Image 1 (tube, one colour):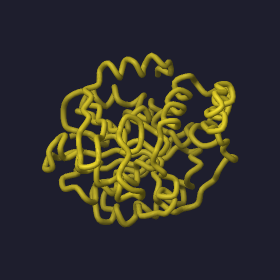
Image 2 (cartoon, rainbow, N blue to C red):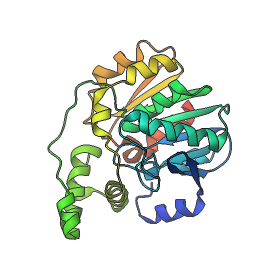
Image 3 (cartoon, rainbow, N blue to C red):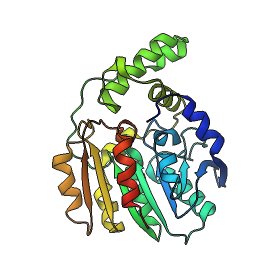
Image 4 (cartoon, one colour):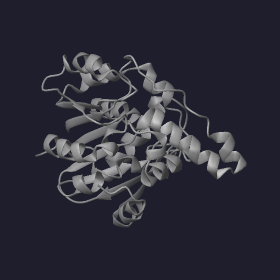
Length: 278
């Protein structure tokens, strides 16, 4: 699987970019491929490139729509704080993009898992839902270590210190490898996403609300985690979330941390293609 940064340029050239207006600004959506629609929702301190190693595989069978959520990447910030302020423009622009009655499938990662669950609860005709390392579960976490504040180095223009901080944080929170083994693609995606994030998602992810949203949706749901995910104890939380949901499926992916669809794209891509199959 490719880990060189040229993959970003390749995907950017392939994308059908739509800046969809809503009452407070515009949300940037990127489309790929053709077929039944699948929406990929990135995590906190992220962007559409959280899916950089998954888009091509999924777009071979589906029309894949990937937003920068409001307050992230190329999208305008929402009016106000809190989950409701983000959900309103996300849902409005999605309906404008593909039509409010168009059946679709949703895939969410981390904070985006909580967002995807709420979108599924609010939008009719979501056929299937897949959540990877989802936030909002309120279960135990298992941090590897403290994160480093990269912002002072960024403001000072110290590129070396910024890179060191980003490598450390990726190793502590996102991936299962050590900082020296972080590849250039992961480093670029994470750094660019962090410096362009204007929405506070951490408190929302830890507040909860996932189980309630899933109960309202009540459709087929896939729940997957990397075995080393620091944001949850999958063996404990998976059965709790899955038990009330008819047709729920859980999966623990070997050799991966929180950013499971990046680190084990070789396992996640076929898993998602099987789950999303018409």
